[in-house]
Image (cartoon, rainbow, N blue to C red; front, top):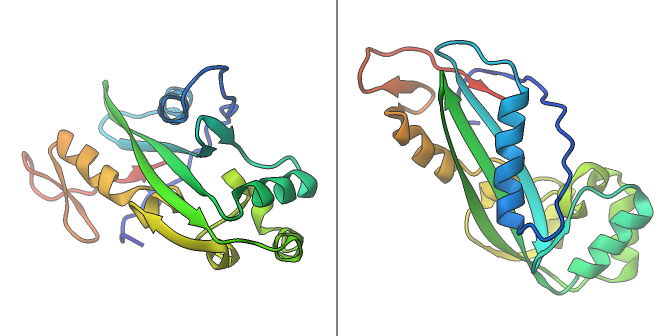
Length: 188
């Protein structure tokens, strides 16, 4: 969507949450662990992220199946929750990481609505069992914070972290202030 070329490199990091770890700390740690698990090459910009949904300090990961997805949706119904995305950027030996937080209110949902949404299959690979960018948009009453964070890549945090590397987003290109225009690719 931002017009940048990129290559996806799966990290295969287990998205396990540690007892007593806050959602923000878990999201940041997982983004950093993903960075450490992916092969990096000199001069390339790497980006890793991990998105968590939490009610208070209770993290709702990806559901293990339809029954757990249904239970998660019923817990979110009529409530506010937070979406945390840990984002890490690295180039050469340097890494920067931070976390974006967005509050999301899910409207009151009838059991039938939750069941029908689960039957689409969409929530089965999503943290918190919904995807705001898809059919799950119908579940969301309102948000406070960045919409793109709920989708999994907080654009405003990405832009902020890029400035720490002296990189400027030039609408479809990334530019370094210390060099002439060059292509810097997003890596996942």
